[in-house]
Image (spheres, helix red, strand yellow):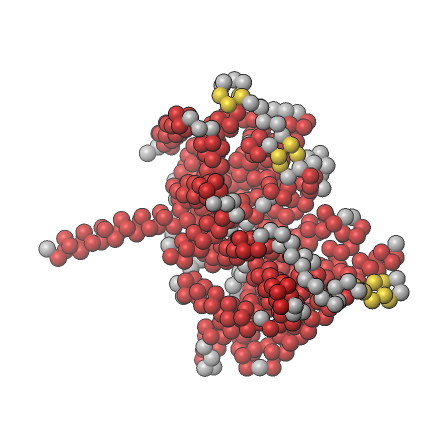
Length: 288
Length: 324
C-alpha cells in the first residue's frame, strides 16, 4: 500500500513536470498576450509527429529533434500571429472570432495529420525508453524522468530569457501596458510576434517529450485542451513558477486517482479541480 | 409577421420538404436529412446562448449526449414512446444547463468557454463509469423497422420528428429574438455591465438562456440512439459536435434566427456529400477551413454579407440619386 502510494506520487510529479512543458506555451500566449490559443495541443501533436519522422527515418533522438526544430516552430508561430493580428486584433473584433479561428486551426491541423499519417499510434525508439532507476520501493522510469528534466530545463531557460534579456522584459511589459511600451521605443506588435513565436516553439520540445512518454495519434490533442487551460488557470496566468506547481499538483492528483480509483476517473478529477478553482479563485494560486 | 403565422408557414414548408423527400424514393435521403436537421436544431439552440447573449459554449456535446443517454436509460428501465423520451431528455439537459449556469455564468469570455469544456469532460467521465448505460463499452439500441402508428419506416419517422423539432426551434428562436427577452439578451451581449446597471436581471436571463439552449440540445440528442443503434461515450461526447455547432452559426450569421439555419444546411450538406464521395475524415477539414475562411473574411457570416450587399446597393442608389 505504501509503495503503491510512493510510486503514484513519484510518477505524478514526473508527469506533472511534463504537463508543465505542455502548458508553458499557453501560459505565454494566454497569460501574457491574452490570445486564447486553443490550438496549442494540435501544434504539440505536430511536434510529436516531426520528432517521430526524425526518429523513424533519420534515427535521430526525438528530444534532440525537438530542440533542432525549435526555429521552424518559432517561424510558424510568428506567421500565425501575423495572420491573427491582421485579421482580428487590428479590427478590434470580439474575442469569439479569434477563439473560432484557433478552434478551426485545431481541427485543420488534426485532420491534415490524419490524412498524411493515418490514425495508427506512432512511437519512437530511444535508449531511455524502457530502463528505470530503483530507489528502495520507488521506481523512477527513465521514460518519465528524462522528459521531466528536459521540461524543467526548458522552463528555467525561458524564465531566464524573460527576466534577463531586453526582449524578455519587453514581453512582460507588453502584457502590462502596451502604450507605455510604445513610449519606451519598442514596437508592441513585434514583441507580441516574438512572444507568440516562442510560445509555439515550446510546442516542438513538448511534442517531442510527449511521444517519448506515450504513443501518439492525431486526435490526442483533444485530451490536452482542458488540461492545459486547467493548469494555466490554476497556476495563475503568466506565472511560470505557478504553472510548474499547478502542473505537478494536477499530475499528482491524476496519478493518485488513477492508482486508487481507476484510470477512468482521472479526467473528471482534473476538470473538477478546474471548475472548483474557477469558482473559488479565478486568479489562480499564484495569480496577480 | 406574427409568431403564429410564422409557425404555420414554417410547418407548411416542412411538410413540403418531407413530401419531396418521400417522393425522391431513396431511403438514404432520410439518413442524410436527419443529420442536417439535427444540426439545424443544435446550431439554433447554440445561437440562443452564443449569438444572442455572447457566451460561447464549448460543451454542446454534454447536453446533446445527455439527451441521448436519457433515451438509453429509459429504454433499459421504462420504455417510452420517442416523443415523450425527447421531452424527458430536454428536461434532463435543461436541468444540467441550470446547474452549469450556476457554476460558470459568473465567469466571462474565455473562462466561461473553458468551464463549459470542463463540464463536458466531467459528464463524459460520469457516463464512462456508469455500468447501466454500458460504460465505455457502449449500449446497443434496436431500431424498429416501422413506426406502428403512422405506417412509415422508422427512419422516416425519425426524420419527421426532427423536422417538427426544427420548426418549433426556429419559431422559438424568432420569438425570443423579437421579445423583451431578446432585447435583454442583446443588452447582455453588447455590454453586460451597462445592462446590469440599467436594471436588466443579467444572471436570471443568462440562466434562462443556458436552460433553453441546453434543453433544446437535449431534445435533439434524444432520438440519436435509434439513429446510430450503438451509443458509446467517446462518440457521443465527441468534440466534433462542439466545432460543428460553433462553426454553423458563425458561418451563417449569429445575429438572427436564419443564420444558424443557413450555416447548418450549408455545412451539414457539404459534410454528408463529402462523407460518401471522399472520406469521413474530410468532414472536419471542411468545417475547419470554411470556419477559418469565414471568420477571417466575413466576420458577420452569410447574413452579414447579404446585409452589406443590400446596404451597399442602397448607398449606391442614394449616391446616384444625389448626383442627378
